[in-house]
Length: 229
Ligand code: B12
Image (cartoon, rainbow, N blue to C red):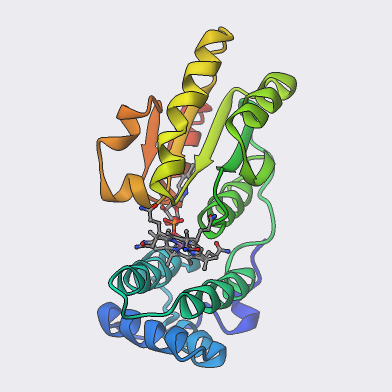
């Protein structure tokens, strides 16, 4: 299913100093040095660390820190942009591309709601697919009305939403309201930076479940599908 070991990811190595690696990875991104960034990930490959784990432990914190630097005016938007592009490219190499045998599960879809930050959705989609779940991908930038129309048409039972902008996170409430009005009991699972930073936000916007990372997403979907673990 996953041939990452052939690409250098997944070698055996001893203990890794994660904070130091996050710093090195961040510096490589800010220097716009894709090869150096890739080397950090290859170097930290460890038999006990899975690719999904180093996405969570290295890529997400490095980008969070870059985002804060941009907010404080220390980093240019162009650096954030290139950092995003480099990570997108690396994710293509790291993330599992295959799929386990399909598990029986409710009809599911994933979308980035009125937002173009796509890395989180890409990770969640790929990890779920690798775990045997099939999802309709509505892409990024979809509006509330478009999303609700698609859910009705496709009879989606579990909707996964990713958002990174606070303004987009607040729109989840409209999705929930429209689904309730249409008498649909679609389960809404949300994730993304605003929900990692404010643990009550998910409930406030009417989501049924909030996930902090892709692994939590897989665990939750597995539970909702009633699959024994
Ligand atoms: C990279 C980046 C960009 C890139 C995006 C590249 C791309 N292809 O996605 C570019 C440069 C294009 C960009 C643009 C902008 N950005 Co930007 N960006 C970021 C940055 C630095 C990292 C985001 C990221 O990719 N993180 C890595 C991913 C993997 O993490 P993640 O999405 O959180 O996903 C993880 C979990 O949350 C979870 N997850 C996520 N979704 C879901 C869903 C489900 C169902 C589940 C189970 C789990 C789950 O799983 C993932 C793995 O753990 C953030 C900073 C931050 N702290 O997030 C700012 C940030 C999100 N951006 C911000 C802003 C303001 C913008 C711009 C408006 C800037 C501008 N003036 O143009 C534009 C708007 C773009 C748009 N319309 O959407 C702000 C938002 C502030 C706010 N309060 O809303 C942030 C927070 C920066 C900041 N600190 O100010 N950005």
